[in-house]
Image (cartoon, rainbow, N blue to C red; front, side, top):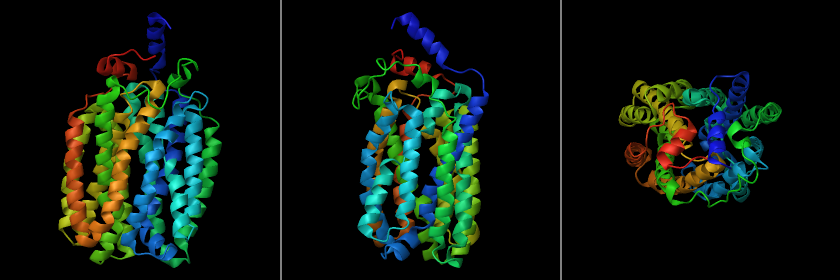
Length: 423
């Protein structure tokens, strides 16, 4: 392909105005993310039920099983790579991921055998990917990129409200925690399949011929990409460490403090409203004040919220702290995820983010394996404080090493920061 043709193609890839299809795409990705996040958040509320009722183990031993299952995240690089294969692409990959991971997650809630539970969760975890951030990065105009991702996550996070409400009624119905999951997820999987029929392949990915788009699993591992792969991997590592503290294990922590299920459901319900606000505002903030300032400011506020949550025991202070934690975490998580997808060429963007997930998955493994012994040794509170502090400092340092991408076309970012014209 000549240089002139490359430049022309590059200029035609960016959609300048919002279209009806982008509205549909936003709705579809929001629905997909709703059920995707529902499956994640639901695990948080069923930690005690899965451990004690399903598997007959101590809840503090469940993270150890999570560590074993966490090794599946090392294989995410292969499933993420699928989206860069010309014959599959973004659309088919998203549908494959969704059907497999959500279906296996349903099966896991009805698997009382520990070994079988690990195997089923292991398979589900390999495909537990939401590449909506990649699709949005490639399809949505630069000035709307952050806001669209924020809307998708914000709408998707309403699933947490549903989960929080359902958790209140777990004890009012025999095996209610299993029943509620089944009646939500089965219609969800069917809805995703139906809506996916109206989705198109992204303009950028579809613009390549099969010959031009021939890449390998390791082609992204080169000198020009090393800086952004390295920094983004570390950033994602620390994001996951933060997630494995208050966000994931708040329920057993609050139960030990003496709160009951209704108290926890009430706190979680309103804090997740904060999460929705955080996701929705993340796009507005990152598109206006920039990716870096958005992450740095909200990390600072998160620290204040975590102090409220960990160093006070009365209901009001914990309630306020948890709202701050959930709201700010949503902002810097959402901003970082779309941020990391902006530094790589279209033909290898999914593979690159797969490598980022691969290296960051060690945080999932480390987090799960360390939480069990640490929760026994020092308790939930100190564990949240020390592990969270290390992770938050790591996020601040890595973000300062990344350039600002606010409002910049993907091809411009590649040309400027990596110094190569996208092919």
